[in-house]
Image (cartoon, rainbow, N blue to C red; front, top):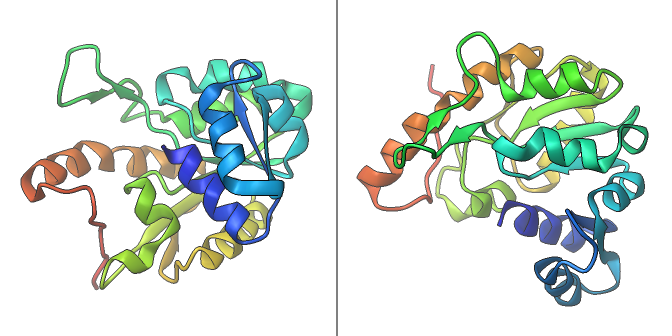
Length: 205
């Protein structure tokens, strides 16, 4: 759902987008391509990584490293990787726990494993519909980015503003992903209490 939402938004803004899957010919990826016209295409993780100037990791956090390895180190080298995933562990049912937390984060693990990639953690603290359409809320609230490369964060910030985001907080280097990933247990509790995923956090000072 996250990849579908982000890919569709990017196409609507005039970007060429290639949806990657574990194998070529993925039915959902083909259906997405058909819906989105000539700017949309699909292929393997490797095809998508080689094609894109900016890569979005929209995989389930538990398989993100495997998916990025399938994408190919050579295809990712030197590129910006926007990591939208969270290390949610559903092995003991609901609510999920975090498989990586406190002294590490999925964002950091990805950065350590792919040192030549510019990892920017972003958009992992809200529902995918709101990721691409903050105007669905009367007050969209804040989103957060972090990463080691300032220029990469500036580029991602600019892209997110084309989605409609205005209140973007840069939390610093990639270790700040520990904090944004730890928002997820709270987010899940709030979704249960509110009865909807259509909400966001707003920082007031």
